[in-house]
Image (cartoon, rainbow, N blue to C red; front, side, top):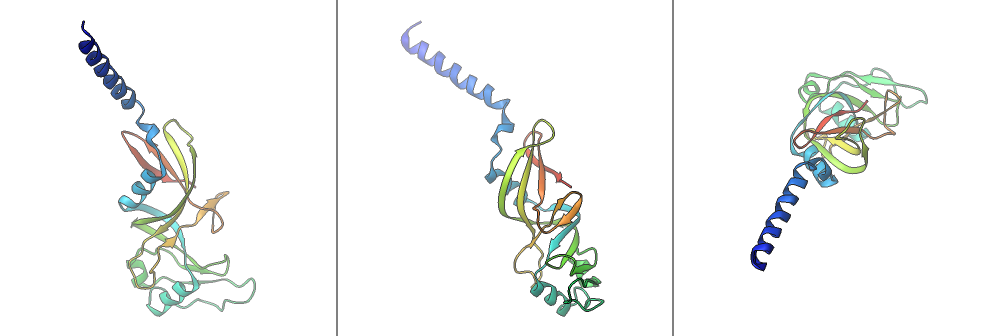
Length: 185
């Protein structure tokens, strides 16, 4: 075999080896850019997740008939109230009363398919099974209404309870490509 033929054979062998090596390692291409694209690429089904409202967004929701005025006065320490979601709020996929006073900010449950916005990917680590990753992310739901110029931050879960102090965690699974498996609770 002459030198040129030998180089061609080695080049082809190198390319074939590279292709074979990459076909078995698709799960290794996990990165934050890919995570953001997966999250923001298509609407995601949320079932009974909670989003945080600013006081201004809450007040706008009352003025725009998304929910009713609170059922009791809030402002005194230890005082809590709820605002029943109105038809217009239900149409925007708010699915439960707005809670006020028991946490730093008002919050409300949402249910349905939502476009999500990634404010920041904070961390990721190996998931509970092979080819899974747990991603902690500052995540927000996009609500198309004049009261919500900014997406509404999702609450995380700590020790089985929704909290405004922890971020949501998404479980990603590799199955012929990375995809969101679920929000971890």
